[in-house]
Image (cartoon, rainbow, N blue to C red; front, top):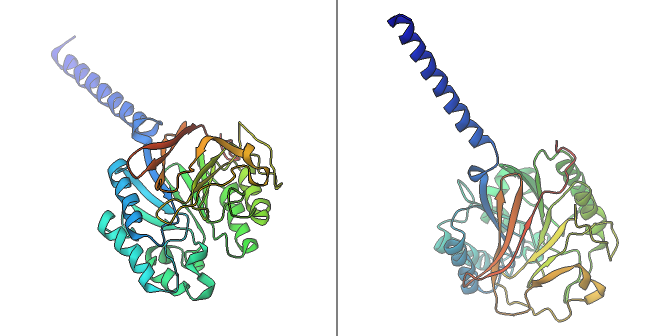
Length: 326
């Protein structure tokens, strides 16, 4: 081999090695792994007590600083018609998080609760203080919508609004979901724990549709407590069967600052069998939030974290079957 051919051979070999290296890097980026691990936060019922809300937000900053966005499942303000109460919410977020998350990175989404009083004069404040959410989803005033982030689809529902009007959106979002993960968030829990009532319409009209399309978790608030269910077959009945493989978990995460209620009877209405063992908060001063860590397409880990950093509850899940999963 002459010098010219040797030079060409070395150059070709180098080019091949560079191409292989680039391919390996691209493969690492595309495949689930460390590069695809990320977190988001869900919590709710932050009204009334500004200082306890700030303590929960401070716990987020301390224990989940790398979160990508926050979903509040409702009741951000004591009186939705009163700017004073919205100012409390705004002040807490600005002081602890640096913004209300209405633009740029680390967005802050809200599912409307009963205290937002949307139909009783609170809509203008909702649109003003949640201006980014309202602007992004102007056709629904930011009251219900779907958004995707990386490998997750999240459906935000107005559980106190016209369910029939929202059902088409939810069906389309669930059936067309291209991702391995599907979550929903609204205010009122379906099942009774403590002092709330069973939500038959939400179960039959929305819960069943979500379950049939592989929804992994429905996050709610309203009950001032933390409770996580087992995986459920949401078949529209008051006492649904369990489904360990593809069931939809119910998580009430309503201890974000509001005065908490102790769970008087976890088996209210015979629903004790639904609750995951030790996954309910009976202490009236344990405020906290729920962290979801997405581990690529393979699994996600749920943790409920208290204001002192204690991990109160944890569970890891694999994805439910989705219509569009290959």
